Length: 547
Image 1 (tube, one colour):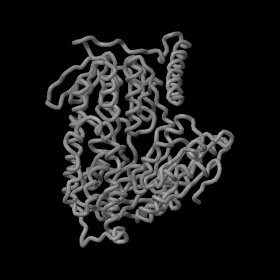
Image 2: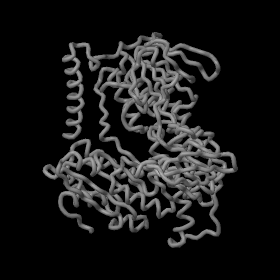
Image 3: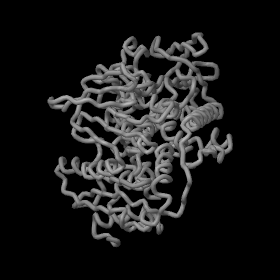
Image 4: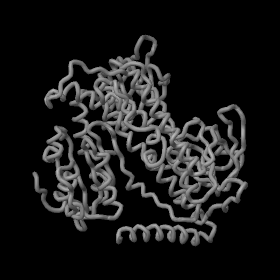
């Protein structure tokens, strides 16, 4: 009860602070820009959302739930954005099928169409499917390498890639239709087509049927997401040289795969195809993989991937590409310059990050300001430089993550409805969905050192966790950083098979300003992987029991 009241108090304080800032600006500051009013029946929309991805469709549903007349415009003709259609969900859904060694049982037959299409399951379908692809490729790998030691033997284990891709497409189709079902349930108007501003209150839509319509609204939210970042001199054809989209539609398992970029997406996709049999080489310009990761955990993570036969060429740049033959020849050299060498591959995955998608929206015509890297500039209420026009998700600064976009969307429409919205980007968890996964929230040890704060570190290896040992999957660690004087938790980093699930205890702890002792003195069920979090907390403020 006290924690809930504290949350309400923080939200009210946040609203008061924003109002105060506006008052200091003479009553006309951006912090006091309110909604233009609510629409009456048959009038223009209260809210228009351009983009039906995780941020856009969640914003649309929330706006409708708050009583706002809402229209969502989506150019694909299918809702869910990159995440659901060609990103995190299919990338983690299609290989779910390979978890059955015979690949003869459709995994999604375990669920009824209603389960897949509507209501509560759909509200968190991205978490349900988010680890499926990597988990399934892991299970295929386990069937080949680990099952015999558990007394489970097969005469033959095969991957039917065509069936896998077909089931992936079916799963995505079911889920996108499910979001449409939620739109109907919440009375959200859905327009299929490409939207472009013609004024600060009008959006012209070229519909997918070939027509055109103009949608009018009092408040317009830009939620168009991001696109694959291209590299100079490298043309993505989605056949030999692919983006993450093309990597999800390969017709056969490549014998050799080169991944350009050692970030989240590159390592995830490389891990998937590596487990299915590809020889994977990762080329990275920077000196480290996943630069945002805690350096100690990063080194452990890289060693684990290398044990899985993933090769790394760090501090290396691609200077030439030749696709004239059957495969691809890449010319690479040290990032600082030096002797060149050649890499041969059947497929090259370009995974150098993403860039905000704002092209063709007419933002310049209405005066929306952007920063040097093309992100839309917004204030704490997600208002752009144009009153009544807002932006959320990947098109604004902050982590380019689906769950961050969802939080943006909810907070933005809460502000529009006259309520208090809140998103703390410092507490957005990040997860690398390899096996093991790596999840983190808060500050890394490098960041804490740089801040000059005295701190304590507690670590606990899963090799000492009974559940991890029992299931023979004990590679990983929990690391907790806490302020020395107050014991307040500053950051948590987990490498474990289900780190993406374990991290949320830490997110909640940081949200409420908990101390490591608070976690350590909280009873955790035995035997569970989460006990490693408790033990790491004990190691932070005192001593662990089981090591």
